[in-house]
Length: 171
Image (cartoon, rainbow, N blue to C red; front, side, top):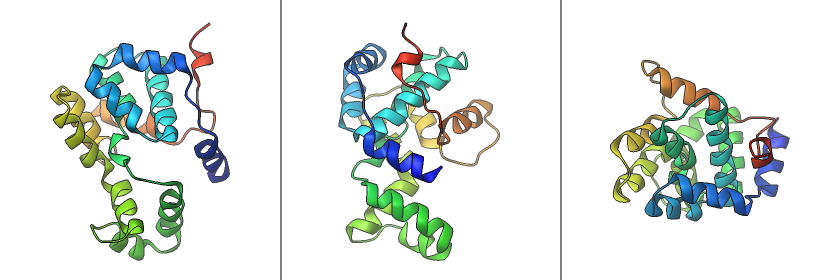
C-alpha cells in the first residue's frame, strides 16, 4: 500500500480539463491556491473531490474544501512524507517531538504535515474563502466524531488504493 502511495506521489498528473474544472468550481483566489499546491497534492485533492461527487455531495463549499483540504502542506516534499510515515511507525515519541515547531527543513516539513489543516484554514481565510469552507479544512484531519459530514470526509480522504481520475467521471 505504501509503495503504491509513493508511486502515485512520484507520478502524479493533472489534466488540462481538470484545471478547468478547478477554475469553474473555485473563485479565482482559491483556484490560485490550488495551482500553488504540489502536483501530488493537487491530484489527491481532485481525487477527494471526485469521491465526494460520487458519494452524492453537491454542496459547493464542501466540494471546494475537498479541492483545497491540503493547501496547508506548502513546502512539504516527498522526503518529509517518507520520514513522517517511518517516524510515526518506528519512533512515535520522536515523531511527536519533531512535529512541534522547530528549526530545520525536516522539522518544518513534519510540523506542516501534522498541522496542515490549521495552516490551510489560515490561508483560505486570508484568501476570502467562505467560513464553512475554512472550518472544513481546519477540522478535516481531526478526531471530532460529532460532525457526521467531517467524519465522512475523513473516510474519503484516507489514502485510496484505486484513486479516481478524470476519465472515471467524464465520458
